[in-house]
Image (cartoon, rainbow, N blue to C red; front, side):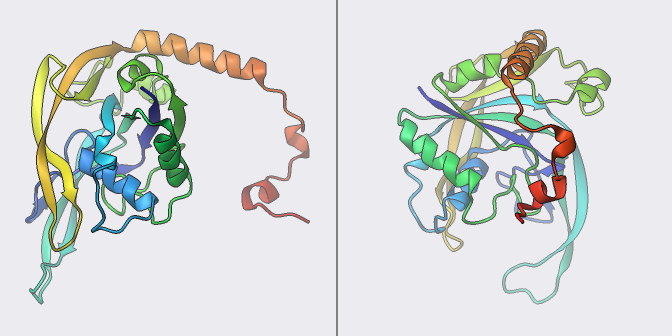
Amino acid sequence: MPTLILAFEGPMQAWGSGSKFDTRQTENIPTKSGVIGMIGSAMGRKRGESLEDLNELKLTIRVDQPGRKVTDLQTMKVSGVKDLYLGRKVYLSDAKFLVCLSHPDQAFLEAIQDALNHPIYPISLGRRNCVPTGNLVRGIKAEDGTEVVKTFPWLAQSDDKKNKKNYSQPFSNPSSLPVFVEGKAGFRQFRMKDHPVSFDRKNRQYQTRVFSETAPIKTDSLNQNSAKIAQDHLAASNPSQDSADIDFFKEACNVSE
């Protein structure tokens, strides 16, 4: 089954699944409602539109760098109440996730890919202030997401792999990366109320979803695969212009004379 590959990277991420009061928590991995909401925003869908087709996407997540939780104090407002109050919002700092979306219709995945590359509404990693960095879209593969996570290069930067600075317990020694899939196929199962039914502001609805943790991916095999991909890319590259001749200002700003 074809799979659209996404890399969730950014200074901050937040994946809430139920907290509504003074402290807004985040889950340790992206929620399906958050992923579907981001795609819907990119495609320009209204909040009241059906989510039936997007919910058919099969979600597979590999935790490449779990990051650490940080808390931010912010003023909040409750509908119908005049005064602001001080609340807490919890974020994941410096986390990286490989997110695979599988679907039998590759044309549907290509439409999502195009929307994420050219979003109609702004996209974010959970909350609006969590802006993705790097290359969000990493292409479409013919394999199912459970196979993609076994070979796709590790997203963590080389210094993070060496120093393990962004790995908190129980990931202090990231020799393997946790993987989560939809359904009951894994050795440990979880329930989360993050299956979106409606994003309508006046009638938000979510159902409980079952997902599982499967066998972790050994980072040694991913490192070897990353080196091979980098070597192949270097061998195949044939730059037509020497870097010394490039006007980087014009390139970055898309300026033509």
